[in-house]
Image 1: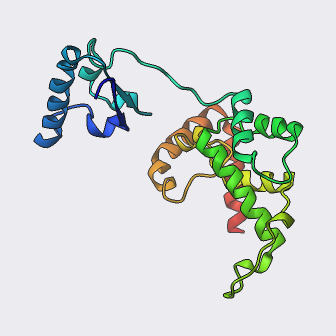
Image 2: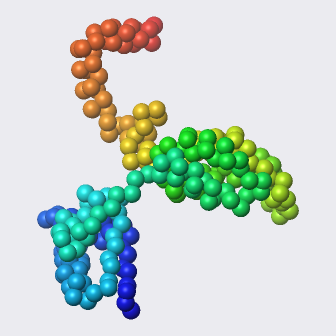
Image 3: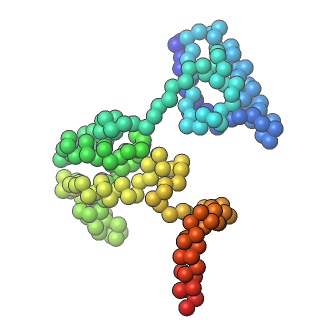
Amino acid sequence: MRPSIIFFDEIDGLAPVRSSRQDQIHSSIVSTLLALMDGLDNRGEIVVIGATNRLDSIDPALRRPGRFDREFLFNLPDQKARKHILQIHTRDWNPKLSDAFLGELAEKCVGYCGADIKALCTEAALIALRRRYPQIYASSHKLQLDVSSIVLNAQDFYHAMQNIVPASQRAVMSSGHALSPIIKPLLERSFNNILAVLQKVFPHAEISQSDKKEGTKK
């Protein structure tokens, strides 16, 4: 049927960068996809769209003219967009959240994508549910819940924000969080090298560290 739209989500998994370390199957898939896209111009009224969050992992041949030659970058939502997303996910709530609170919450959700904001609303609702009915997970019997009695407040959202890792922090390690026990051994050598350089620049750091060791021995 025409017009037609073909959408590839996570296209980096379908057509990754070809290399000698890949098997023949991956290279054949990429080559076949390139050959099919070269013939789309003659068919007319067919739009091919690909989405990825790893642009560097896509085979460069896909980004040449005549294939995916138009690229659009969608950044994380700004404060206005975050407020609008919050309004969408809370519009059916009763009582409704005030516009002022949604604006304040949107200001605090820097680095959140749309899915993160949806997860935040869901987590806040679950926290309010557990606060209103603390026995819900402790009882094996069916409980009759009065949904109208569950009222969310600001503390529910702030508590939920502690459980949500925004998209901007999932790709990199936040400086405000301790390293994971799994990652720490992998970075131990680099950490020791950096520490050695810092101790040369700041000799007092070496003294304080040796004092700390002596105090521990005592």
